[in-house]
Length: 144
Image (tube, rainbow, N blue to C red; front, side, top):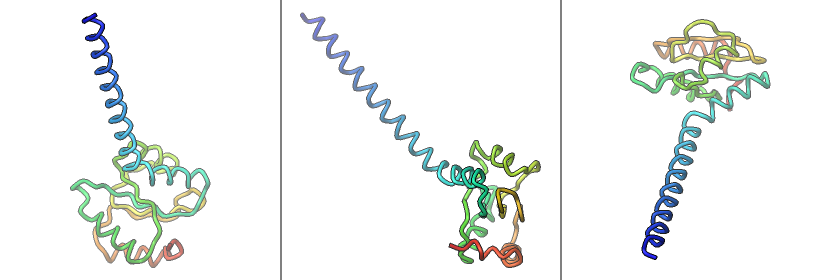
């Protein structure tokens, strides 16, 4: 009788551990998807649908000190854009879809028309360059 009670208690502990493990895994996947998935998936969908859009390639690590400045300038001009982190795994597949066979150095702004690169600027170093790129290429058309 005593062994059955111990076995039942052990089974319950294993079941609780499995439930907690699955809960942690599901929460982890949701966090990863929400962190890297939304704009990444939106860019892929926009490319499939051959839409016109602006994508801002950035990196959140310390190597991209100008990324926040470029983002501020895009926001100041009211430009609607997709925020794409170059460290996500689908970065190379997006570059393939855009037929980009060179290194993209963040911060970079790409203007896509009908699913193809129309204008771009990479490795941006100063604010005047961003502002002139926005004005010369009439990115105000992409304002929200």
